[in-house]
Image (tube, rainbow, N blue to C red; front, side):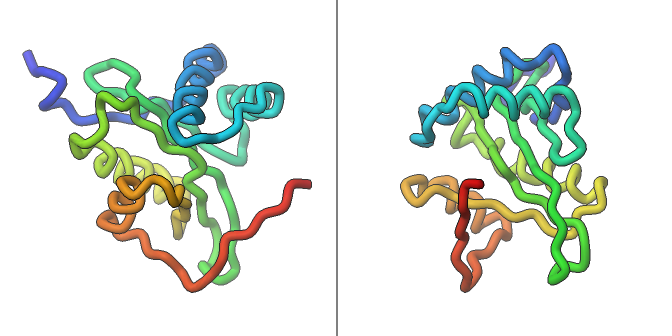
Length: 154
């Protein structure tokens, strides 16, 4: 029998019955990364992910059949890139599973999913207060650009 430490993580698409489990992971991520939990809009977005929105994909990260996190990527389109690109919207591993090299494997898994969907680029952001995440992304080939990420709520 294989133990959990020798297993490789896998991605399991979320489905209609997964709203409560996904919301629990998102709450844990928001507490960890200091995001405001705005119940109504967040649950509405998670419901869309679970119901299969055409604009994004969301997966549980599993290890030996156990859910240990989640990852979500949203579709985009870029003339500069030549077509379809994606944004890694959220990526979370439970604290007990961090620092074991699983994040790097999970990044490779989501990159494969994006490629299968025709994605030519995967963008992401890293919180300034999280140097471990920035290190993971930089050593996985992600580069900072001479641009500012700006947004406006509509």
